[in-house]
Length: 452
Ligand SMILES: *Cc1c(COP(=O)(O)O)cnc(C)c1O
Image (cartoon, rainbow, N blue to C red; front, top):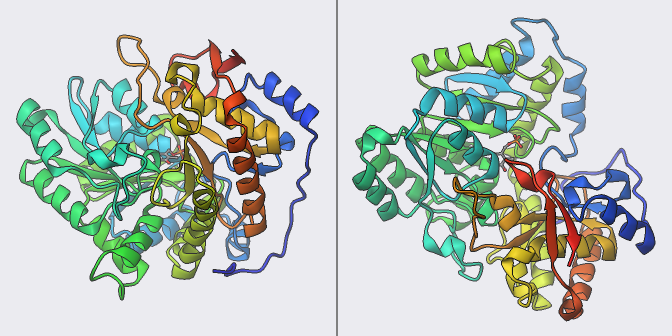
């Protein structure tokens, strides 16, 4: 599908030489997070906050009501969330993890268990900081890069029931349900599964909180793939998805199509009171949290734009386009194509590099040096260490090529595909990395490496 927009503002990008890139990646400790943006040609590090806003959103920025309390932009954001998601209360935060912090603090007691459909880095970090143990209850196929399922992000209901049996429902404050599942490759959850999760949870007095970060993409997959939803609108699908939940955390930086912002949404007035009393400590007044009035306005408008079917169809077809090129060339990638990114299976790309030599980290660095394309590791480095200080060894050792919303064209994706295919031809020559620095939490952001 061609772009459902035309471009009225451009930002020049420049190509560097191979020598410049070799220098740059060395300075960055072979960690693409530590590269300077101006040294990057095509930036597929993340789709988080890298969105291009519309003329409608930019004009909303001019209508910022920057009053300390009672901003009208907050009312617009609240109305958008009530209309599109159906939740009663909204607590704005500076971004998604600000909402995760507050949710984890108001819900978790030390010793609790929080099940989820695969971990996400910041989500699990906040759960653990509050004394919970995260338990992965996603279907087994989600950990297999080759399994082709339409809803590979689904919860394995038996795993969830087993956890309830093993630890008792009173030790499980809520299930954290990600729609879509970032770490599984942007894979969606079906409406049928959401409904069943909610039935099991609620019948045991367990709450359901969604990680709504990419909920519009999830809704689009439901429309395209789940029987009975072809003729429903995206807003109707969203409202049904959220009708099964007690609330959600949202990173506006993804399906809010803004550059910063997020929120916690809730239905329960008592929980809202607790959240409102914490947000003043960590973020700001409950009517702005971590956001300026203008940013809340852009987010309110972005939520509607993200629920537009043409926008979503184009977004998913860009991802599919890159996926198809790599698949045709025989590159090992996570199947099927997800909502926001194409994930390369680095274990299969570099089968000779053991996981403790960081094959995905290595591939991300090689891709940058080769082409100026920036990607991200989603493997052993991102997975971090367990309570005993040992590496988590995730089954999926991936490099993520993430497509920002409305930023790049299909021609940029051709360049990316060519670079990956060239690297694949030369894969035997490549050696792994050694980690020379790591911080105690969320190490992937700032860890440093040296070539072996
Ligand atoms: C980005 C993200 C978050 C955290 O949101 P931030 O805005 O980056 O703080 C949480 N969950 C998922 C699935 C994400 O992709």
